Image 1 (cartoon, rainbow over the protein chains, first blue to last red):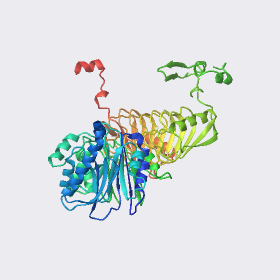
Image 2: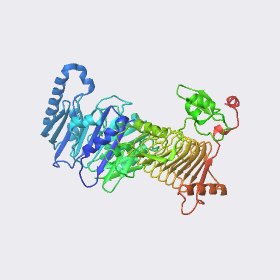
Image 3: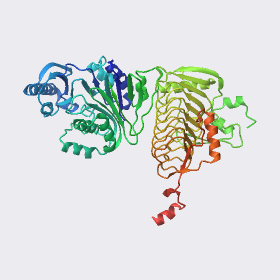
Image 4: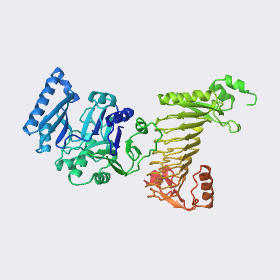
Amino acid sequence: MCGIAGIIHKGKSSNVGGEMTAMLQALKHRGPDSTGYAVYSKGGAPEECVMRVKVAEAEDRDVGHGVHKLIADRIARVDEILEQHGAVVKSKEAPQEYALRYVLTHEGDTAAMADHIEEDKGTEILSMGNSLELIKDLGDAAVVAGAYGLNEFEGTHGIGHTRMATESDVDIKSAHPYWAFPYNDISVVHNGQITNYWLMRREMERKGHRFMSNCDSELLAVYTAHNLANGVSLEDSLRRSIEEIDGVFTYLVCTKDQLGMAKDTMAAKPLVLYESDDLIVMASEEVAIRAILPQEIDTYDPYDEEVRVWQA
Amino acid sequence: MASVTDAELKAMNQEERVTALGMRTEQLTGKSLYVEFDTEAADNFTYPWAPDVDFNKRTEVDCDGKTTTEVNRQIRELMAEGYGTIVLQNPRGMHSLGVGILSRLNLIIEGSTGYFAIGLIDGPNVRVTGRVGWSCAENMMAGTVVIEKNAGSTFGAAIRGGDLVCRGSVGSRTGIDQKGGTILVGGDTGALSGFMMQRGRMVVCGNAGKNLGDSMYDGTIYVGGDIKSLGVDAIKAELTDLDKAWLTRKLTQYGLMPDKGVDHFTKVVAGKQLWNYDNLEPNEKKLIL
């Protein structure tokens, strides 16, 4: 089933981390397996890049106590590759033993560096960007927000996802949001099923894009990244997807300063929308919106093939 | 029947009461009870276990901090105590509020609800001051439901009777599998509204999305605005004086009458050209196929 939610403040920052947590926790019944956030701040210095990396998955626990050495070795390997590519690490945190946050500067080929890091099996870059912080892990929103200190995150906009695993495993790599590798600050969450997934995936792979999971939602991130890299606007990419991607879907995309949504031709997946002059909130169910806006408000369901983009 | 007093009825258990009222019961499953009403007993078209409520007896229920089950249970307890007007406050998008009410009641929901609000009802008058989520009043049998703001998709799915009204706009697949009753929409409706409609009437004062009335078997859809496209086997029909009179009466009743009247409405019915409308019996079909 899965639940998705998004929020964007126009022209100001807010406690987006806390707001997203309240909404995603209200959607827990739609997807208890994992929870993910893509939240955006005004960003650090222009040359700085935040990189979120995970170096272990649930299956890695099978090695028993050796998992700690495995994780340490993989982290050391990431550090080594960053150094090889001339990246300067300004800070490095580990909210979880297997999940790291780097702030770095890098002037070379970021995509090549990201490819190199992911050559190590089990290591995956969750996101890179100047404004984007992408966090996803197993458990509900309260668990993930607590573990990663998200409840106090100040930012302009964000999207999130509660996942009920249907067509792929319960693990971090299959959790949403997906970063649009290797493009900075782009993330996607999706509710639905894409029925021409393999056809589209092969097409994207032939164009040189990489996939880290077998989750059909990852296709939307890669597809969006491909379009944006070829000069297509976010709004046009969303419109194009309704023609080219087959299946039932409602999905949300964030860039550094935008939030967009698209619904498939059947409007088969839900989305409730609240829109005011300075705040736009959307979620699979009204109960999530009411978790942060308990007062009387007007909401509505976007129709089939509807595409909207808002600016922060 | 006349020989049974109210006091005696109240002292009986459910099955005894059904028998005493001249109704035959049949246990279909562990939880289902089929009730056949005695057509001679004109005054007894309410379920025998329906609580005797007083509409002037009013109370409020604060949904804040309660689960859906707790709120719905409290509604039943209050009805058993004779409350005929119940106001739910602070619903804040809760799902499945007010479902399964099978007797007379004035239910007012102050705020907005989530999915499946007021489903499976048979008789109450309901007013929701906010918006409702997907599948509002699904399988409604009788009563009136009025939504003051917007509604989500599958509004009035499979309803069989009663009046279901949304003053705002509704989502997609409105009245899917509608089997009777009336759906009135003050604003627009989305794609595939009236899909597989079988009976009843749907009125949309605004615009209708694509594939309106797709594969409808029967029933009538009236649209005041533009229709993006008609579905398979849905056709336009002449708006008769009888249609206009009915539209005028219904829309006036709920304060939805457009300023320009009803002459501009488009009437959509089933073309009945699909394979299932031929006159062949199944065995004859087999011979041909």
